[in-house]
Amino acid sequence: MRIIAGTAKGTPLKTPEGAEMRPTLERVKENYFNAINFDVENAKVLDLFAGSGQLGLEALSRGAKEAVFVDSSAECCEIIKINAQKSKLYEKCNILKYDYAEYLSLIKKRVDPVRFDIIFIDPPYGESKKIINDALKRIIKNELISENGLLICETGGGEKLALDFNPDISEKIKNGRIYKYGRIYITILTIGGSRQ
Image 1 (cartoon, rainbow, N blue to C red):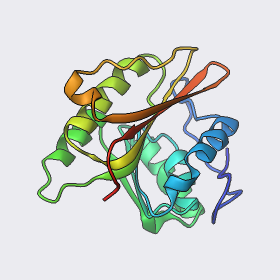
Image 2: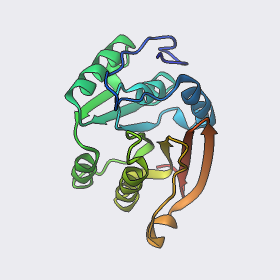
Image 3: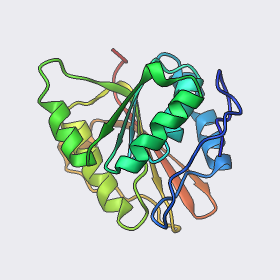
């Protein structure tokens, strides 16, 4: 696995070991970064379930301003640090060891609210649809995504993401795009309005 494009192009990335670890395939990553290419420059990025950090680091390499990496595994956080240093992107990274729900609860309580322009939500496949729906509800309800921000969700096993929202949340989604790569689905949701 490596960074595909940008200032750190070609940098090989260390990946966590274990059956539950499932890095996004390189061809999948390349295709959907092409789909969001014009939204990456100067973006604030959140990489939930960060794993090796490859999605956030790819965004930084392509011009994102800063990235927060959240993973509940201490091993993954250490690997993200190694990859960020290797790719010379470490100064733009904030690496945090939290469960996704714990992090999203903490960040909404901040006095100076943070809004991200791009959020990657790529949990382990087992209960990914349930987890993604929960994360999306927390993010949208608590206004953690900027206007015109992108929520990028990955599901596998041939299962398309089915959104399970109340109307007050679903009405904030302006657009949805779905891309299929073999048995992997990438769902890109756009939040209405203009980026702040």
